[in-house]
Image (cartoon, rainbow, N blue to C red):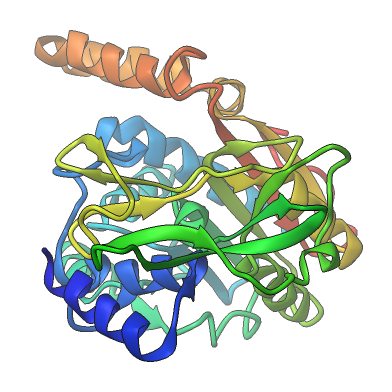
Length: 349
């Protein structure tokens, strides 16, 4: 039993079952025993696109440079990354920007919940002198571009099921043996306040998506900018129950190793799009990751990299293929861009 499991059991005994979203938040962010507070999972429990191929970050760097120019090349400008992991993607982004003779006025900023990753970012990105934001408090002080890869999937999700004609929220409690177990709350949930789907008997919703859109709406009311999100999820139809956990590259039960495994859910890109449109933002996408990267010129960059690194040709080819192949990450991962009202479509859309 993990230390966090013991802590959660005590909390449940004292206060009763907790919503799945509260359990997920505790597993990821408990300051003493939470996953992101205590361990660097990238490369061990899971792998992300920037770690698969440097070309991923390089393409996003050229995308950011192009969009900065489309914003009128503002002298004061922030390039923000949410959930920057080991700093790999921002390192690749800024290398590509500098190779294109740009980025001299970019202020690099990081929003990071993990103290473990923050330490790695400060070391790896020291020459960029990044600032570290808490809850995006500085967004909106200058024109900005926000980029987040595999960040939305970590936002805690509430889950609802229909039982006897009523909606009930799924909760984590204790079974007869005193072990963690998922059940449903006895009281009726306020699920109808969320968007429902005809015929659905269960659905999952990330409340923080609304907060995110509100933050961007406020920021874009002051300065122009864009926010690019890349993650796995669905474009249409609300997810049902997608909560899952990973440790050392293997999927494990979401209740098996709280605090020692990464928890994640599919992103409802359709809902994010609707929330942003309702808020008056310019919305482009979601589109699939494969076509998006191909449209940015990932194939040409791959060939150039192979020519310069013949000994790594197969490794480079396999990495880029994994990013764009529909059978791998190319279709499952989606890309959406939320922008200040009135901005034209960004490149890649």
